[in-house]
Image (cartoon, rainbow, N blue to C red):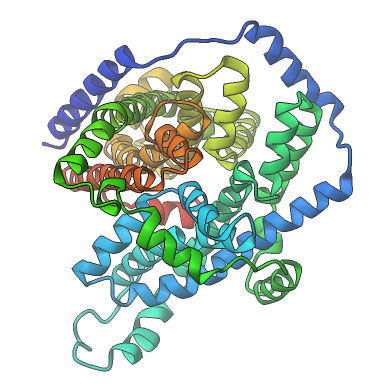
Length: 493
């Protein structure tokens, strides 16, 4: 039964991916991609930066924003997790986390300007929604008492029965989420916040690839050393130090906030009393010229990237498993995967965009490498934990196809479809780089100060993400996966 389910899901998934491949724009448009690639990769041997004091400030700003963002997100996420059983709360949080933090940053730039408040809100809002969902799931999975204490005071029940058993998992997932916050903070530099991403973008545009590599290496070191400097002993000092370091919390203007909700995002025909016909024409024009092509391209890029992620995972996971690879190979592959999954998709796509030009190719490669490295790491770990029979074949190809792959395939599909909604969110936001997904039209609307159109496109983007999330969840339930990818991630798998 499980084999037939896996086959049916895989067949549909591959068929849709191949159709998407046919319609995808994968053209290389740079004049000399080979020469540009050589210049970029050879620059790693001459890393330097013009002003190290500026780089240090960006480094500290990145850490400080991420620390404060996760601090506030934990508080709001914990409170919201108490009410996650409410349908209204679940729907509201699903909508909130469906909008990428870079989109939130673009929204708050219009209200509060370019400052620390914008950066914090852009991360805190979607992260609070995500943490509320995961915290609620962790608390439910680690409820040792079940229904025996039902009817008691809810807060006491939460503090004294649920939290103690789930605390290690809550802390582990929060640490993982902090790593995500560092990546999110870095890419906020691409909209003007002076984090590491700001100087990465600036150096790349000027062709200073030696500076690009130095920034990337520093970022990898920052991610790799999280356990050493972000823990229960350092958390409180880091929060206090971040508050003191980030002294620019200005920008809140109630008049701007009121104008945004009462004027800016109200459709132009409605705001100017132009009547129903004008409103319908306004919507039809946006739907035909922006929503339809943007949503189509977002779905095409998502499904193509999902297929490429699956293929890369099937190739890479044996390299990080001791059942297939020697220790040196396993260590080298592990380092390679750590680098790939530590690099935000947006930064990878930006790099490939400079090398290959604006098409779906840079985005597809970025999404494939980042997500493929995450799933390969998880499947490789599961493969290592697998116990084989004494009479199992020693030939690697037979071991792979007839013993290991059939046993991990259901979990592989579950992990893949868990990343589906995440890939969709990233596919939309990568439009900011010039790829004609929904993000492209959202960014264009903001540049033209057509905030009513921007808001409509954001709603469509969120609804599309929610739809994919629902289908993904139903698919995982159909496959009856035994593990959740989020629990594997925060347990370090």
